[in-house]
Length: 484
Ligand SMILES: C[S@@+](CC[C@H](N)C(=O)[O-])C[C@H]1O[C@@H](n2cnc3c(N)ncnc32)[C@H](O)[C@@H]1O
Image (cartoon, rainbow, N blue to C red; front, side):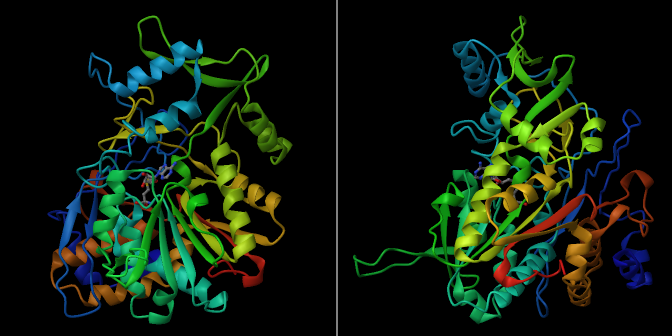
């Protein structure tokens, strides 16, 4: 339906936009070595913020791959001969513990080690970074999340004070577009206290800038200084964990591509039963995978996850990924929503069932080996939405879980096509139109863009069905839009 709408939109203009000389540089790579999809977007075009009228948007292009697990054969770097600080640290843990570490411990260190973790000291997004995410593709993404948050706020009875929490806000682009888009709805924005849950000091600074924050001066020393986003005159604060966000107010939580960064344990079926995949140091001093000889503590989470699966589902898999941190975080979310009211929206790539072997590493828009030069590539895994549902339902009877539905259904039902058409009318150059339309396709499209008239290897690929949306809400609010 969305694709039809896109196809209906100004055919002539589209012919101009997607002509072979187009500057929109998508690249499709494929491989036939696995039964899973091997498509890979290598390029996307992002559009700078477009206003409804009277402003000249400044489009920009970026070469990017999303992180939705496309199983491309990893490239190996024959890279640095001397160990980095993080590699030394990981080897130190393995040495002093006297044995291998779990994939989860490795993943956590690689991503969030306070000194050298992948996210800690750099901006990893966009053409200059390692991968692209939906908020970076188009402003429409954050704006639609704003529509969702505002609808939930309406369902909550328009409370005059609300915590709006974003988990893992990256550059802060989603929140900036949300606040900018909602700024005309003063009752809503005036109710908000924005809380950014972010472990990276570098990204916290970027978020501060993108939200156009200022530190309010107060001559009264007894009054605590506040940071305000000038996009909507909304107070903003930063925290390392969700637990640190003050409780007691109705809460709206957004988690976009956050759960996929949480560490997973990997299990493999062997003749002696399920064994945990571990990481050790080989004789040549490189990292390698080994299987645990005996049950490890995370086996408890495996057993729990297996109980939630049907026998036929279990029989089909030889490997299982389990994410205890996702289970615990879901329970924290469900408890918070249960006691304070509100809801959470989780959007990520994943499955509504057992995840088998999805952990992947991406560096500079290329899939690389998971063990290759840790700390220099992003690690992410498919999100197990069924496990999120069970974790939430297990902890509280006061919450209900909705979805997952596809990103395309989610954004489509919230009216992204109307926003797209309004923005299209305000584009002043072909480049802006092209950028907007390719961004729209990337968000809601499925597979290869049918409108594409450029070189085949540059066909844009949509994330519309590979990304899923799920909501957890306090039952008092009823069913959230657009999950009815
Ligand atoms: C894949 S990025 C997604 C960024 C953003 N949501 C987007 O879609 O562009 C993951 C984000 O979560 C943050 N992050 C990862 N693990 C975290 C943790 N354990 N605690 C807090 N933040 C974390 C990263 O620093 C980053 O901002």
